Image (cartoon, rainbow, N blue to C red; front, side):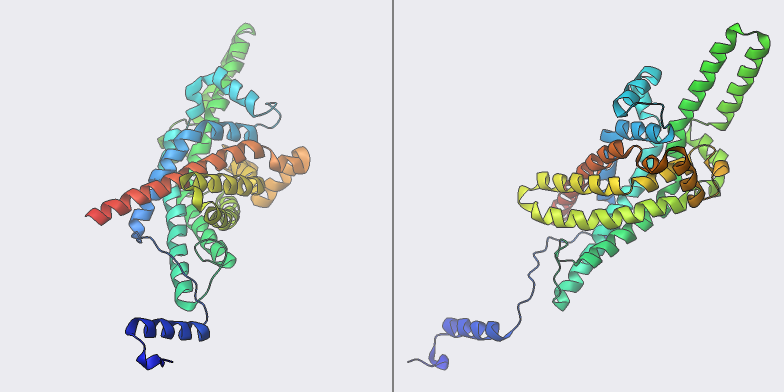
Length: 349
């Protein structure tokens, strides 16, 4: 019988590896792609957000009108048809320029920061032999912490553009109603016409329809009105979305980009529906007159409840789900494509 020392080098090495494996604890194996610098992750998130937003923006407009005008429409389809009749197809894209300005840093920060933090946690886990089941080897608590931090950073940075978008979407509705009152007053005498004309001028002055007009009227601190409601919506949303997406994406990975989109849509829909109550409150507080009507999140919640009970907090949950689901599905699929393109470019450079 040959002793270990007499074995050929290859066999001896194999035996040594077997001996060490029998006593050493198993370590998690993490297969890594080439790591992208943080600035490229931010850029990838920005491009992904623009693509996703342009595709689903009409649904977002319907969602905003449903939440702001309870009882006016019988449902999303009725609201969609009404908007097309009143303002044409272009009316469904009211406020898109402001939203694109806002969504660029919003998606850049949310996707980029979450990706960066997950990468750091994955490195830490690999070095310390920690293995979790929340995707990329993260534990559930780590995934929640990464998502929450990304949601907080994104909310603080993008609250002004969210407010501008909402006010521009709703300004057209108020002006349209005032013009209809003026038309109705035409056969009621000069006094009625004069009063309706004055009312229209007041409405137009208090409902600017341009980015510059909304910013000038709101002022710097006014652009952060409703920030607490925004944080109470976006931080829990991100805390739910990213861990769920990480787990689903790891399970759907064999399906490639289709799996990424499916994971993003599923996670986005579930998280959006659960976060709808805070989205309703945020939309009310950031609409024109919201600062005067509501003293804070609690007061707004009380008034919403007094209007239609608990059901009012979930008004628009379906269109919100159908906005967020494809938005994040498309955005995350685009995010992975852009990152892949950047990686290949960097490898050739």
